[in-house]
Image (cartoon, rainbow, N blue to C red; front, top):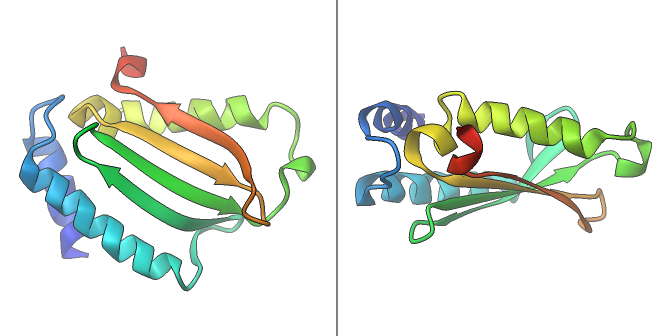
Length: 127
């Protein structure tokens, strides 16, 4: 929990578009912690589990792989664009893309772990 609070504090203390080594180390530590939890089936919400979090400091890129617990075939048409809007709102309105210049990706997986879709929010999406 203290790591998460440290990361939140650094998000607001770090100038936009600079991923310092300290912030990167904190994200890598958070990824290691989240990946450990993911081994036991870390639920993000009622219908989603975190499978993996990857940090690429050189590219200022964070990728989350999330498994849906319901097949995408059961979702209303247009779900991809709705999720992309939500993803961009989350990461642009004071989020990591806007405040730190990080590209955030969510790889959406089917219940059987097959790739279904990728959500991407880049800093340039926040303008």
